[in-house]
Each structure stands twice: as C-alpha cells, then as structure tokens.
Length: 225
Image (tube, rainbow, N blue to C red):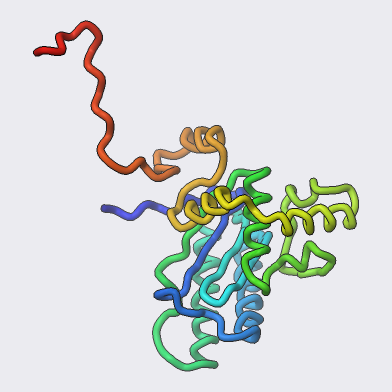
C-alpha cells in the first residue's frame, strides 16, 4: 500500500510528533534538550516556521507550529533532525539515527482544537514551552490567536491558561489529536474536515475498518431473485 503524502496546509497549525527509534530515549538530560532547542530555533528561523509550543519528553519531540509553505515544515524537521543527531552522537557516541522514521503531524482546526493542541504540548513534559505562557519569556515561542483570546491583559491570559492546564485536555480529545498526528490526519470538527476535503483528494481521516456495507437493493426489486 502506497504511503500517504503528508498533509500540510500553509498558514495553519500542525501538531508534530517525532518519536525515538524503537521507543528509546532521544534526550539523556537537560543539556541535550538545550542543544535541541537551540537547533529548533535556528531551523525554524531559517524556514520561517512559527513555533507555538514544544515539549521534550525523554523519548520524543512534540511541537505545535505554523509553516508558511508546505515544504517549509519538512525542511525544518530535516535540518533539525540532522543537526541534533550529529550533536547527540558527538556527545554520547553510538551510530545511526535516533528517530523512528519520518516525523508525523496532524493539521489542526483553528479555535478550540488548536487551543487543545497547545495545552496538550505544553503539558507533555517538564521541559516545555508552558513557562512562556505562565509568566516567563521564551524568544522561540509565538502565542497563537487562541491564547490571546483568553483575556485582555497578560495577567488574565496567564490565569486563564493556568486553569486550563490544570484541567487538562479531555482524554477523548487528547487521544484524537495524538492519533491524528501519528496517522497523518486532520484534527477538528466535521465541518472543518469537510471544507478541507474540497481542497484535496487525499483522505483526511482513517477509513472505517472491515468490509464496506452492501448496497441496498433497488426499490421494487424482487428479493427472491
């Protein structure tokens, strides 16, 4: 079965996951993470990709980004992967890639879905971009419109976002976002997916499993024939 082309739409948010090979750790410590963040900053700037959020758990990378072109996201991730693997091998030794194949991503509907993806990434690891929205300042991170709509002042936005992080993303929505990223699908409401379907012939959600239902017999046909 042919591999689906990656679903990327310029100017829209994308939830990105890059996993370690065979589930192995890709970060040994915070020094590795600092090297990765520096590489991300350089690669994103070179491709003009806007980074809204990042999280660096031990065994994967999670990002929420908006690329200016369909090619910019792939170029950023390729550059980032090569630079970080080189630095990691120089420090820790070993051979080969750290990554489990190519990166995965989901195109995320603006609004409630993008806010959910933002929260999901920020809460995914102790070292993440959450601090940027909770009183800190991270020059790598650009807040999406959904964050600005949480309040009229920095204090209101910070307080509202802190509450949202404490509440967590509802498990069904969190699972949908992650499954969409790993599968390369769109994450959003039915209307959003329907509008996207008018722009591409590529499947936007996984097809139902099992055999398709049989077509109903034509009205007036003899069921005994």
